[in-house]
Length: 387
Image (cartoon, rainbow, N blue to C red; front, side):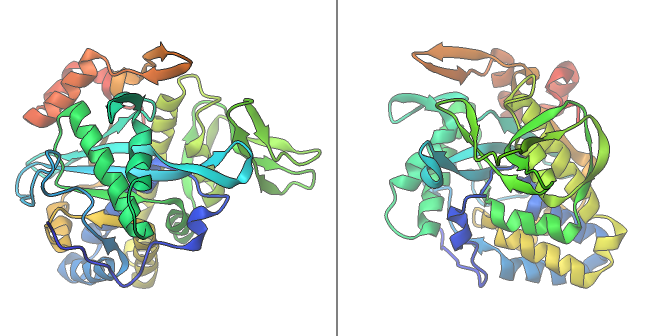
């Protein structure tokens, strides 16, 4: 059993249970982006300073059991696989103030080849059909099962959720992991605020179910009643926030909202994955910009905000080793990959619709295990995200 370490700045706070906690694919790049912009901006001294800052900001603990089949070991000299998880707290159908469960709507396999010069990010759809405890379920339920089945504090419950999810992802893909990263919403908003928002382009009109304009032009929170298929909490005279086609500056609030939307998009969760990938690349790009990497105080604030959002499992490797291992990866070296070629592949079982990975998607995961991802993507360009 690897030793659990609590860092000095906890990520666990009362706001985790607040009404505005949202899942975001882009959460998954907060610390990764901080590492990238750290090693690109100031040489060895900057690396050591920022590593010390990260080391004191991030909570680390064992999330992937070292005795599990899903554990790849602590050697990161060769290819590296990390499980990136973004969590949400599911609203109950009685109102936005109560919650019925914890879901991992964001599940990404990060594959770094042995050359350590790029990173492939493979998004697994939240509705993917899997077997959990002998029952057919959606993969985003795995985290919740582990979370609810663990006694103890919030950190222990979250670690147990990732542990069960990693086992489930391993059974689905055959991929073993050298570590994991769990990120929630609260600290992530802080990163975007420290960055001052981001620039993004909208290529498909997207209507929010989470935010609305009231009659006075202020943004207010709403929530979606999935049973009755209706947005709740709309103020009198209000209207939903709509993200129109075009390029513009996004405030942190609107950027997070845009990357959450899936119900009004043509290809649902696949289009959401694409938008989330846009956001992460925009964030990493801005984090690596001259205005951030040359401003030590701002750099430290960004890193600290990322640390507050994160629980990290390095699989027994030292954090500083990860920093140096990723030193050659830049934003353009982050390759976004989507399963099923970005096409919905549903199957109905009872009254529930699941997403099923096709044969080519399973070959994609095989290529991760065989270290032939680049060759696979050359032969199957439809698996590359347009972003």
